[in-house]
Image (cartoon, rainbow, N blue to C red):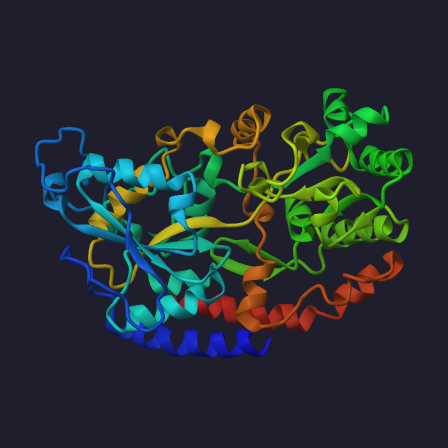
Length: 456
């Protein structure tokens, strides 16, 4: 808790410096060769022999495909430049590495990875920007609204947020006073969603109706979910029916301590859907069917089902240690059979152009390529062919800003915990325990909206 508060104080202090000193630094000069002061490793991504000096590549993307503040720079002027991408991911060991190599080969633009620990991301980047050593591209992984304070409108990078590739939910979220600060692809690998994973082997060996079979019967609801949890626990003789990432579950049904609409955060504490979601979860805990903590019990075969996000679909994801043949996936259940759609919600995954970026146009070209799933071999991303197909399918499931999970990001802003009273609550006391954190939630919301006001 103390570390989070100290990090917040440093962030606020640095943002003042950034806001007054870095807004105009959007030129296309070369990047600094290094980032001082504990930035972690800063490395170029090997381009596998792609030339950075050949100006004859007719396939180079055009930097000027935007409107408004878009640049008119010619693509050839970006050859030989470097884009600095600040991330905690070791891209060389993921599906992103080959795509970055292909980008350099095609455009002549090098990519330097600036490794920044995820738990220090905003604090570190705020310091680099204030010191004049900003990266070009930043990654928002449920950090909004703090990322707005360290980014500039994406139009400086030749990005048109209205282009078909961009996720309109992220665009709507991060557009303040007509300026868009973050973008993300609306394609599969860059989307998050609440999903239900299940142990196919346990269900098959015990003759239990699977979640996927309930979906095909148009009968996958909270009621049949409870039945499946009870059936698999008792028939297989395992510890639990299901384990949960609570935030993923709640946001998928539009339940959250914090909500967001039209550029403002507001409280969801009094909404019936939040009470209902927590009561459903704690009723299952009380009956011995659910656990609200560790996914490891699913991996170890001691839980028949697991609610979590799309990272579970990936080869290097949550379930990498499990046999492919043991894993199944489907939608989270509808609350009621008559609901039109299966629920979908998730965390923020987005990208922006840092304040003080030295190569914003190169950064724009990089993001257009990096976030285009047509440049990826999806069979190398997902754990099974079934998961590959399902990842493409869920992108078409509707969702809104109401089903985006905000609680973690605002808890980080204040260093306060919103669910401390309901996480161990008796189902009958859910509403009373939610009321206990109203002031805490409102204080977090005020700080978050103050951050947005500064950005505006």
